[in-house]
Amino acid sequence: MEDERKLGADGVQGWCDRHSREIVVNRDRSANARVRILVHEIAHAHRAGHLDYEHLGREHAEVLVDTVIFSSCQAQTAEHAWR
Image (cartoon, rainbow, N blue to C red; front, side, top):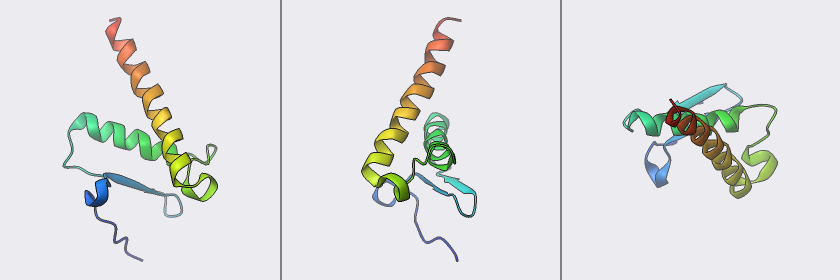
């Protein structure tokens, strides 16, 4: 089954399909944006976290995934600031 979701539509910049084990990221975004999108989708994909719509609903899953992004990317930024 071909995925018909369009990147950029309604703000969609990537997605994760856990069943087919596929993550899609909008390659037209800047490198930093692609990293953020990838971390976001990896958080959805991680099997231990259940940060998906099926387990939590969209609103809760997105808040938790954005928390992962903030924590991960801020930690990386802080680490580089000390070098």
